[in-house]
Length: 128
Image (tube, rainbow, N blue to C red; front, side, top):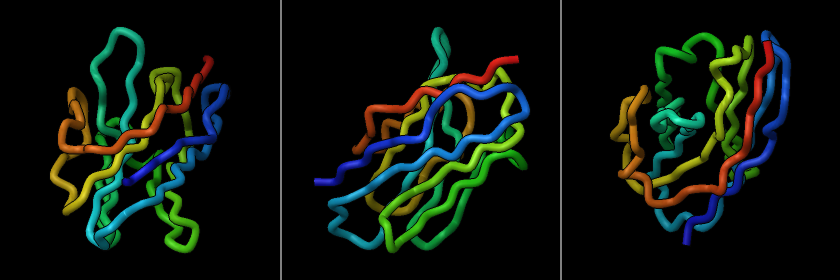
């Protein structure tokens, strides 16, 4: 059974940086997709970034140039480096995983239904 658990959220001022981590375990196939989603109160879930097991990455337009998704295979950990944070980045951030190639294009109103495994989330709050 795949398990993913996020960490690294917190509060930061506008323009600051945070790095989220997602510890993953239990994959039984070498081909999988991992992703970061976020959801702010009263808003639809948004796909932030995806990374498949061969290293291809995609980003939502809203975070391109500011966020970087990466993975440390030795530690089975996915990261989301977030720089130049804005108040509109405030949300609960979720790590998600699925087998097979990444099929979603990150962006707004992406429910993530194709992802079977989700972490409990970590809160990111950016103050102006």
